Image (cartoon, rainbow, N blue to C red):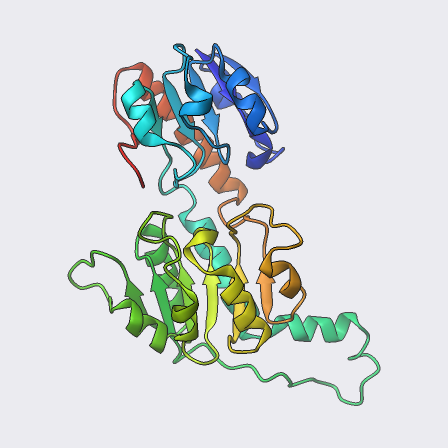
Length: 318
């Protein structure tokens, strides 16, 4: 098979692509700008992408293309409805990054609750070295035990985060559109009002876009630590930046953005150095082990497609 990898750099330079090379001829592009997508896919039977946007405009008049493999769980960057009409199969990868994302979520929560931004800055600046005491205790930080950790989106990642939160002594509340019996689910309004920490693990859909609006962010419990490792557009980024700058949030941790990388006129750029803000470059999914699992799953999706099987097939809009 002829396989085109359009944005290999997003998978990491340390990731060996041999699982794909075993399946056919592989053309690898570190990055593909929009104007080159169409030409680079001509003649390819399989497209492997992470962040590249694919739609009818750059997929039309390409009879060779039969399969699009996403190196991701979310598929909002692919016009799946157009692909279905055109007979192009779309496969994603689910579950590969659960531990990686949950780990970074917990790391952000611990960093922000323990006020490590302020404490490490005091040491780096020399303030601690030249200060009068053996220890610094301001700003005040609190133990996690007894706090309420809200989880918005209670799928695989959300449940794993909930397990970590419970292990740290937190009471866990969750919100999902269709809760199952026995899950600690409440309304979104209750979640916002009760959570000392609120982490978001939702796909980007028409229903979740802007779900955490300015009004909903204002409804958060005073001092809430808000963490988004889902998709940037599920929250009003300007409202989050303002809440962080004004001190209404106890902390802001974000790994995903509506524009990636975010530009200098993005709301987060102005608050990126605040001690109670932890911004990371869309890295939560990317532990080496997770990326290796992702690539192995992509290869298996291609093998299954070649056998005429339906595996990890995306059937409609997310």
